[in-house]
Length: 287
Image (cartoon, rainbow, N blue to C red):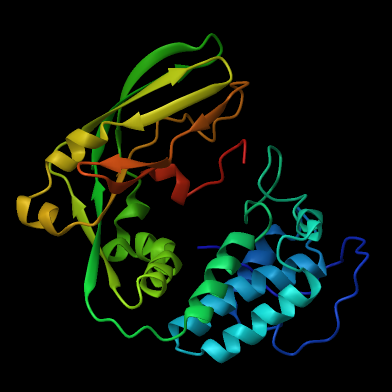
């Protein structure tokens, strides 16, 4: 989940003027304020970037509250200034999703989340009933093999999962998947995607490959899923494995970028999402 703010900042030069629009500014939104307060001394947010980001965060809240009409108004305000697929989107993204960028709020900024919200609104109130299950399988610890600096000599260390992953009944996992789960409900015409969180009793292993430009570091996902009780496994439609990260720090200093997340398939073609715990608590150095 991206947290942003509406605090007034000095703006970057912007060729497109944004008209006054009462739906795009919510000055009482504490999480939005907190984000700008934290990053205002590191970057400048253009009016267009703020317009897109605020529509993403507040539009998701509108959907959660059943206010599809208000969410549509927010998106229409964005797409009026930044039409879908227009090159203007790249012009608001220079401070996001790059090596040296202080933030990562997408590339283009907020674009893909807004597309999901747009589809949710367009599909309207679904009529089907029923549920799907997304099971997050958490490894509490891992034997991690990783590179070390300065000579890229491998080391093996024992790491535990970041405490933020399971705090407050897995709250960070729930908010991270909230928009995705709403989107799945929309495209399946009403099937509710429930998130189940299962913490393993045993550690996993994390290993890596290095082709000279990219280090790929993944846990043993199959072995992790194999430990899930049969009753839960049988009802699972989406798998998600999360383990301690194989990236030292934020990955800086390696002259390579790290891949520690992605998608694959498990079993008879069920979607499999892979994440390390660091994705939730810091920005990767190369992104």
